[in-house]
Length: 193
Image (cartoon, rainbow, N blue to C red; front, side, top):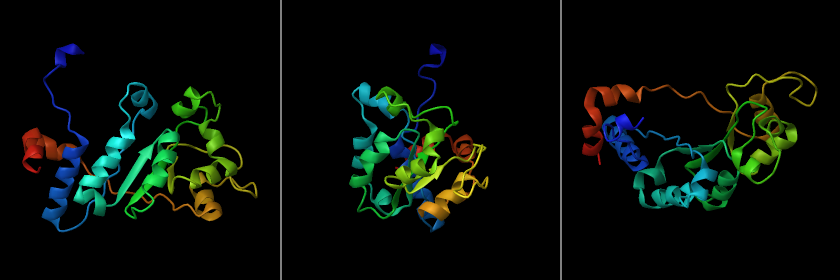
């Protein structure tokens, strides 16, 4: 609603990186980041591709060159395009996000392909994901039918780990960043820059 225009500030990725770097320094340990490239096809169409901006941040941020970073996307093309560009960055991984089985990655839909997320969870689909992403996440899905080659109804993460040598998605601790912002407000994010 336009009635909220100008009332709130949006935290940039650079501010999140600076905040995380400051918190990591204060705690004496490295803290990883898991950004999502949202609506890549839309932003490419608007002349604002996200990937070059992410790569530029990776190049100039000392913290992003060291910290664990998992770049995730529901689209396929942007992850495939990033794969060769991050090949020398041991701290950066790519994660293919998976939606409901009947849905499809929008970049594939826009290109006229009819590959669904269910297709991507098949053995052939998982093998394809393994060529560009080291992790995939289908956490909210309940698999239907046979998943593994012997017909056992195993979850896709087990199939990826055993059959394709994809690392299993490790459970991440849940942090409540909103508590930080409620307590300290947006001003303190700028103070950590």
